[in-house]
Amino acid sequence: MLYTCNEPNCPQQAQILKTELAAIGLNVAVREFPFATLYSKISHSGPWDIAYYGWEPDYPDPADFLNVLLEDGTDLLTFDDPTYRSRLAHAAELTGPKRYLAYDALATDLDRNAAPWVAYANASSHDFFSARIGCQVYGIYGMDLAALCIRHQHR
Image (cartoon, rainbow, N blue to C red; front, side):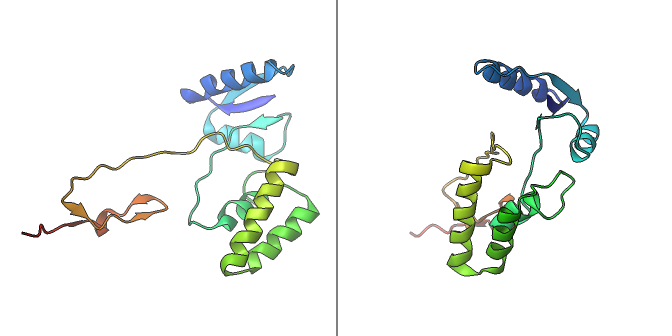
């Protein structure tokens, strides 16, 4: 059972997933809901096996993905594995390169052995500037428009 949204792209994505999984012998029934209903249904268990959910970070730190989505009590069901919970808590206490190395190892292990979710799309954006525009600073939400400046041409 796949729960998905009823927005224009969702039924198309659901059909692609249904077709792909049928190729390996898995039959998928699809149920579509408005976003608010979808999130309510997937956060209160239910008969779903696969569900659509989008996430964007608040700040660029691995804890804002792994800890928030797996243990900190989002509206979704939590990933309740004591070993991973312990490793998440340990990684969150670290600083500097040790923190990022611990999260990298944890994310790799989760991907290979637990797979609590599957990332299937990442947002992409492009900014085009003339050669005169400088001070291009990118943050987690994209281009910092307030930081842009005009380059002075050297003659």
